[in-house]
Image 1: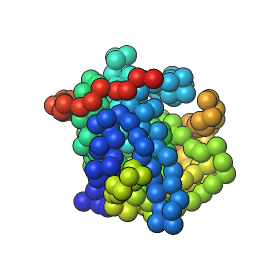
Image 2 (image 1 turned 60 degrees about the vertical axis):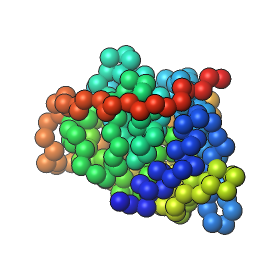
Image 3 (image 1 turned 135 degrees about the horizontal axis):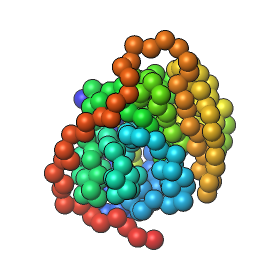
Length: 244
């Protein structure tokens, strides 16, 4: 089990998801803290989220789905979608909303590899693993040859790799794990290095997004076909999403 997997299963994160409330942060050992938007993650999709959902094509894999607001919204619309997350509490909450979700890392074997039409990297999940180029290269094996990635990036021009931990500001601390913070220019650089090209970009409610398409190159991936999803995992009791 990787450090990132165990860290996101640490109590501060699970406790926040159970209640649907923060405070919760990513913290560095030098005292730097990044607030995590637990309430927004546990709420219904907002207009910025809906702009992402509108750009999803075909079958959708939500990477780092968290408590499942996006993948649940897709499922409610009858879309073929699955979420993955390394947090069991997140997966339990997502399945409780009616979504299909697995407790799994994107670097683990996944159902229907090479046949997903859209992969989502939202809420900072371009930072998973601390190496955006490696993550985007991995997604070349996950997404179909005609598929795309919809990614969220930071509004500021930053390209940072760091070690962080989940903290709650009250003494609760998870284990350290690698993370990355990526702005728009850095996203384009990492995408190009991994064989993707940035197409559409948009901004809504202060959040910034980009759609990535595979660069033309020979590929051994099979032609895209609709993925066969596993049955939803049994839901576990969890707190209802918080309302604003």
